[in-house]
Amino acid sequence: MIKKTLTNKIGKPILNMLKQGSSPEKLSLSITLGAVIGMLPILGATTLICAGMAIMLRLNLPAIQLSNYLVYPLQIFLLVPFMRLGAYIFQVDLPPFSVQELTALFQQNFWGTMVSFFETILFAVVAWFLVCTPLFVAMYTVFASIFKRYGIQTNVTNLTSS
Image 1: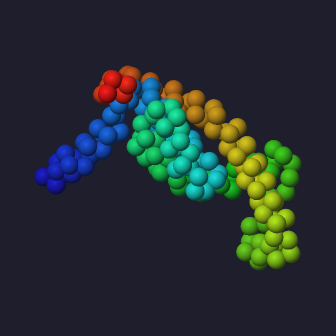
Image 2 (image 1 turned 30 degrees about the horizontal axis):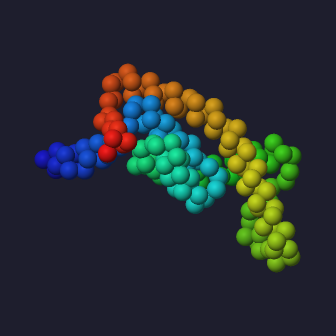
Protein backbone atom coordinates (compact mmCIF):
# COMPACT_ATOMS: atom_id res chain seq x y z
CA MET A 1 0.00 0.00 0.00
CA ILE A 2 2.81 2.44 0.87
CA LYS A 3 4.72 1.50 -2.29
CA LYS A 4 1.63 2.13 -4.44
CA THR A 5 0.98 5.48 -2.74
CA LEU A 6 4.61 6.58 -3.20
CA THR A 7 4.53 5.52 -6.84
CA ASN A 8 1.28 7.37 -7.54
CA LYS A 9 2.05 10.49 -5.48
CA ILE A 10 5.78 10.88 -6.19
CA GLY A 11 7.06 8.54 -8.90
CA LYS A 12 4.50 9.14 -11.63
CA PRO A 13 4.43 12.95 -11.26
CA ILE A 14 8.24 13.09 -11.44
CA LEU A 15 8.28 10.81 -14.49
CA ASN A 16 5.60 12.92 -16.19
CA MET A 17 7.55 16.11 -15.42
CA LEU A 18 10.72 14.61 -16.93
CA LYS A 19 8.90 13.62 -20.12
CA GLN A 20 6.74 16.71 -20.48
CA GLY A 21 7.14 18.69 -23.68
CA SER A 22 10.02 16.62 -25.08
CA SER A 23 10.44 14.35 -28.05
CA PRO A 24 12.46 11.17 -27.44
CA GLU A 25 15.44 12.86 -29.16
CA LYS A 26 15.24 15.99 -27.01
CA LEU A 27 14.81 13.93 -23.86
CA SER A 28 17.88 11.88 -24.86
CA LEU A 29 19.81 15.09 -25.49
CA SER A 30 18.71 16.53 -22.14
CA ILE A 31 19.82 13.47 -20.18
CA THR A 32 23.08 13.10 -22.09
CA LEU A 33 24.07 16.77 -21.87
CA GLY A 34 23.24 16.84 -18.16
CA ALA A 35 25.40 13.81 -17.49
CA VAL A 36 28.34 14.93 -19.62
CA ILE A 37 28.31 18.53 -18.41
CA GLY A 38 27.88 17.21 -14.87
CA MET A 39 31.35 15.64 -15.12
CA LEU A 40 32.99 18.97 -16.07
CA PRO A 41 35.96 19.51 -13.74
CA ILE A 42 34.79 22.96 -12.63
CA LEU A 43 33.06 22.58 -9.29
CA GLY A 44 29.94 24.68 -8.88
CA ALA A 45 29.48 25.65 -12.51
CA THR A 46 27.55 22.73 -13.94
CA THR A 47 24.10 23.76 -12.71
CA LEU A 48 24.29 27.12 -14.45
CA ILE A 49 25.79 25.63 -17.61
CA CYS A 50 23.07 22.97 -17.79
CA ALA A 51 20.34 25.57 -17.22
CA GLY A 52 21.80 27.75 -19.97
CA MET A 53 22.00 24.82 -22.39
CA ALA A 54 18.42 23.80 -21.59
CA ILE A 55 17.16 27.32 -22.27
CA MET A 56 19.24 27.82 -25.43
CA LEU A 57 18.37 24.45 -26.95
CA ARG A 58 14.81 24.31 -25.55
CA LEU A 59 15.53 21.12 -23.67
CA ASN A 60 13.79 19.60 -20.67
CA LEU A 61 15.20 21.55 -17.71
CA PRO A 62 14.21 19.03 -14.99
CA ALA A 63 15.72 16.13 -16.98
CA ILE A 64 19.02 17.91 -17.69
CA GLN A 65 19.39 19.04 -14.06
CA LEU A 66 18.47 15.63 -12.66
CA SER A 67 21.09 13.87 -14.77
CA ASN A 68 23.58 16.62 -13.86
CA TYR A 69 22.97 16.04 -10.14
CA LEU A 70 23.06 12.25 -10.47
CA VAL A 71 26.61 12.32 -11.86
CA TYR A 72 27.90 14.72 -9.19
CA PRO A 73 29.81 11.92 -7.40
CA LEU A 74 31.52 11.16 -10.74
CA GLN A 75 32.51 14.82 -11.06
CA ILE A 76 34.30 14.65 -7.71
CA PHE A 77 35.79 11.23 -8.46
CA LEU A 78 37.08 12.28 -11.91
CA LEU A 79 38.49 15.68 -10.91
CA VAL A 80 42.03 14.48 -10.20
CA PRO A 81 42.15 12.02 -13.15
CA PHE A 82 41.11 14.84 -15.51
CA MET A 83 43.81 17.06 -13.96
CA ARG A 84 46.40 14.32 -14.42
CA LEU A 85 45.33 13.64 -18.00
CA GLY A 86 45.44 17.38 -18.76
CA ALA A 87 48.91 17.64 -17.25
CA TYR A 88 50.01 14.65 -19.32
CA ILE A 89 48.56 16.09 -22.54
CA PHE A 90 50.26 19.46 -22.01
CA GLN A 91 53.44 17.95 -20.50
CA VAL A 92 53.29 20.03 -17.29
CA ASP A 93 53.60 19.14 -13.63
CA LEU A 94 50.56 19.12 -11.39
CA PRO A 95 50.51 21.51 -8.44
CA PRO A 96 50.82 19.76 -5.07
CA PHE A 97 47.67 18.60 -3.32
CA SER A 98 48.88 18.41 0.29
CA VAL A 99 47.70 21.10 2.69
CA GLN A 100 51.24 21.94 3.84
CA GLU A 101 52.59 22.39 0.31
CA LEU A 102 49.56 24.43 -0.77
CA THR A 103 49.84 26.69 2.26
CA ALA A 104 53.53 27.29 1.56
CA LEU A 105 52.85 28.04 -2.12
CA PHE A 106 50.07 30.50 -1.32
CA GLN A 107 52.24 32.24 1.28
CA GLN A 108 55.19 32.53 -1.11
CA ASN A 109 53.32 33.65 -4.22
CA PHE A 110 49.54 33.90 -3.93
CA TRP A 111 48.81 35.09 -7.49
CA GLY A 112 51.32 32.74 -9.08
CA THR A 113 49.68 29.83 -7.29
CA MET A 114 46.24 30.99 -8.44
CA VAL A 115 47.46 31.15 -12.06
CA SER A 116 48.94 27.67 -11.70
CA PHE A 117 45.61 26.27 -10.49
CA PHE A 118 43.73 28.11 -13.24
CA GLU A 119 46.00 26.49 -15.81
CA THR A 120 45.54 23.09 -14.17
CA ILE A 121 41.74 23.43 -14.33
CA LEU A 122 41.96 24.64 -17.94
CA PHE A 123 44.07 21.61 -18.88
CA ALA A 124 41.58 19.37 -17.02
CA VAL A 125 38.73 20.88 -19.06
CA VAL A 126 40.60 20.06 -22.28
CA ALA A 127 41.02 16.47 -21.04
CA TRP A 128 37.31 16.35 -20.12
CA PHE A 129 36.39 17.55 -23.60
CA LEU A 130 38.54 14.89 -25.28
CA VAL A 131 37.08 12.12 -23.10
CA CYS A 132 33.47 13.29 -23.02
CA THR A 133 32.97 14.02 -26.72
CA PRO A 134 32.90 10.34 -27.73
CA LEU A 135 31.08 9.54 -24.47
CA PHE A 136 28.39 12.07 -25.39
CA VAL A 137 27.89 10.51 -28.83
CA ALA A 138 27.65 7.01 -27.36
CA MET A 139 25.28 8.00 -24.56
CA TYR A 140 22.99 9.96 -26.86
CA THR A 141 22.83 7.08 -29.34
CA VAL A 142 21.97 4.59 -26.59
CA PHE A 143 19.31 6.77 -24.93
CA ALA A 144 17.70 7.76 -28.23
CA SER A 145 17.49 4.16 -29.40
CA ILE A 146 16.05 3.01 -26.06
CA PHE A 147 13.43 5.76 -26.00
CA LYS A 148 12.44 5.04 -29.60
CA ARG A 149 12.48 1.25 -29.20
CA TYR A 150 10.31 1.22 -26.11
CA GLY A 151 7.99 3.88 -27.45
CA ILE A 152 8.69 6.56 -24.88
CA GLN A 153 6.25 9.10 -26.20
CA THR A 154 6.00 12.46 -24.58
CA ASN A 155 3.49 15.24 -24.70
CA VAL A 156 5.02 17.56 -27.27
CA THR A 157 3.43 20.96 -26.94
CA ASN A 158 3.66 23.79 -29.41
CA LEU A 159 5.01 26.68 -27.36
CA THR A 160 4.52 29.21 -30.14
CA SER A 161 0.75 28.78 -30.38
CA SER A 162 0.00 30.08 -26.91
